[in-house]
Amino acid sequence: MMNSVVLARRPAGNPVEADFAVREEPIPSVPDGHFLTRNDFISLDAGFRNWMNEDSGDDVLPAMALDAPVMGLVLAQVITSRHPAYSEGDRLMARFAWQTHTLSDGSDFIAPLPRELEFNASAYMGVLGDTGMSAYFGMTDIGKPTADDCVLISGAGGAVGSIAGQIAKLAGARVVGIVGSQAKAEWICSTLGYDAAVIRSGDQPLSEAIADACPDGVDLFFDNVGGQTLEAAISNMNHRGRLALCGAISGYGVAPHGPNNLFELVTKELSVEGFMTHFRHERYDEARGQLSAWLRAGAIQSPEYQLEGIERVGKAFADLFAGENFGKTIVAL
Ligand SMILES: NC(=O)c1ccc[n+]([C@@H]2O[C@H](COP(=O)([O-])OP(=O)(O)OC[C@H]3O[C@@H](n4cnc5c(N)ncnc54)[C@H](OP(=O)(O)O)[C@@H]3O)[C@@H](O)[C@H]2O)c1
Image 1 (cartoon, rainbow, N blue to C red):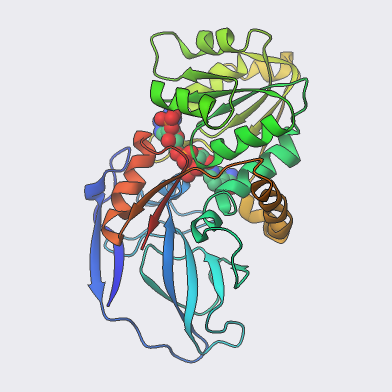
Image 2 (tube, helix red, strand yellow):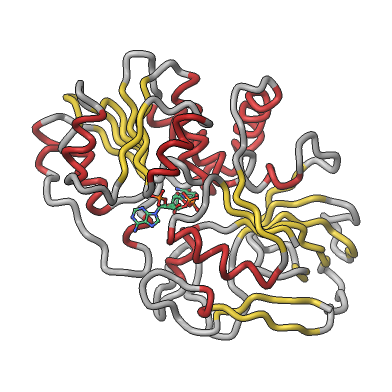
């Protein structure tokens, strides 16, 4: 049988487990021009919250329909193919729905993987997947950290942030992370090598807490959170600082808080650049190559928050917004 996680109701603000339900149906037969995969891992990615509201469709994806499988990213292996471009045994990272199996005509967003994997398969959803490559592109193309920089990272212990912080450390920078709890603050310093941590929900206003942790100001801000966090970072930026905007989880599915200090972009001559990893599709081999070399050398680690079973996918997604995850959130099927 094939199991699918469907959108049972539209989340009100942050998603909760009860917004999702599991449906069972027979595994479909494979018509000409199609292939069937077995999905081994589901990657939980905060950005998909954006398409769960009614009328939220855009150039990237249509709004998700109620009672239909939820769109996401999966690590898949082809088990039957009647498609000329795919053969049994091919491994794929694909934008497929949260399902144990997928019937595809090949028109989905698909990135092929080697048949023989060098690392644990789950790493291809994390450090070598969309989120690890987001850290790579944001740091390599935009942030370009150096040993003279103080680098501040929001969502610092999450999937993207945990890798971004390690890349900035490899460049010799002083690296400070913003996180949601004392336990995560200790973890990013002891396990990932961050130099200091700021707790976003602490007693002190965030801007002051950042100033204490970054007494010489911030040269590069890598942002996964947006809103008030972005505002607090802008007020701590040094002259000609750089901001690499990767995401804005604080505003997904809710009315976003706009920074009220954008004039500081002018007075401090700041550079701000956003990016979308899937637009760099042709450079995935380069990104995976560098991240693999660091992994192989033991220069970076690939922390995972892994749950098991299709029935835990909804919980895993909700956990992202509750900050329960340390590292990349993945469900093994
Ligand atoms: N540009 C791209 O191509 C691209 C690709 C992939 C992901 N992204 C973006 O990268 C960011 C991270 O995504 P992810 O899937 O890897 O998630 P993640 O960082 O693994 O998990 C999300 C983390 O964000 C923090 N958070 C949750 N709600 C928050 C809120 N309201 N305010 C402040 N912090 C909050 C929580 O950490 P704490 O509780 O510790 O703060 C949580 O653990 C997202 O914004 C995502 O859209 C962008």
